[in-house]
Structures are given as C-alpha cells and as structure tokens.
Length: 182
Image 1 (tube, rainbow, N blue to C red):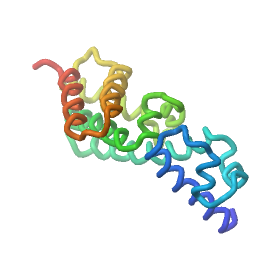
Image 2 (image 1 turned 45 degrees about the vertical axis):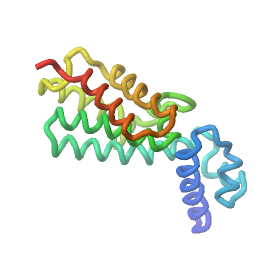
Image 3 (image 1 turned 90 degrees about the vertical axis):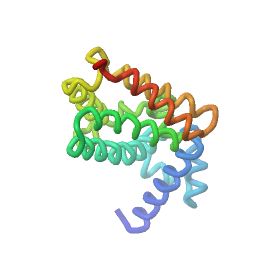
C-alpha cells in the first residue's frame, strides 16, 4: 500500500473509532469520510461496506479486551479473573457507545466478527466462565448467554446517562447473582 493510502486508512480508522465511541454505530460513512478529511471513495477503497469498517474497529477493540482477559487468566485465580473480566467488558462498553451497541447486538453483532483464534471473544469469555465454575466461584448453571444478558442489562442502565456509581452497583448486582453459593 502506498504511504498516502496507508495514512488515509489509518486516519479513517482513528476518526471512525472516535466517532463510533462517542455517537454510536449509526453515523454515516460519508460523515466519517468528511471528519477524516477524505472522500467517500477513499473510505470505500479501504472498507467496501459500512460493516467492513465496523469489523476493523471491533477487531481492534476486541483484540485489546481479549489480551486483557488472557492477562487476567494468567495472573488471577479463576473466580477473580472472571469477575474482573465481566466488569471490564461493562466498563469498556459503557464508555464506548459503538462497542456497547455491538456487544448488545444493536446494529452490529461483535460476536459474529470476533471469532478468529487470536481475538475470539466468545472463546475467552467461555474459558473464564468454565474456569470460574470449576473453581466454585460461579454458579454451575450459568451459561455464556446468561453472562451476556447480564452485561447488556448493566449497559441498559447507561441509557439513563453516564453514572459510574450506578454502573458499579449494576456490576456488583450482576456479579452477586452469578456467584456460587458457599
């Protein structure tokens, strides 16, 4: 790729990351192009569809989350790793409207994209859940869909406006429901 084309692609991704985080996934590609200072044709050459632009952004965000999950799994006991990961997902999604919409399946399903081995969000979520269940930290009847539903529920609270105290309370409530009875 030519240097100017690479610069343009990088700029489009930067602008798209910022814009989708602040305004959600409904921002038109033409607006992303305008803010990036390029034409819509330039965006289309790099990202033929809006979904391909979402995919590039989601892969970037998910790669960071998966890396953090692996770090938690390697440095924490299984229960702590799972609960910290759950809180991390909610926190990251709460401050990034586009990621929140993608995680909840509104407009774009993050899980349909994040399946490659190096950034398979579903696999790492399930590994942490199963590890926490085997360690007796999470109820044995919890399935990955339950965890996602609770995460989406925590994010629904954000629609009333950003409130870090309320977000923490929602995370604590969800985690209390996930914990195994001792």
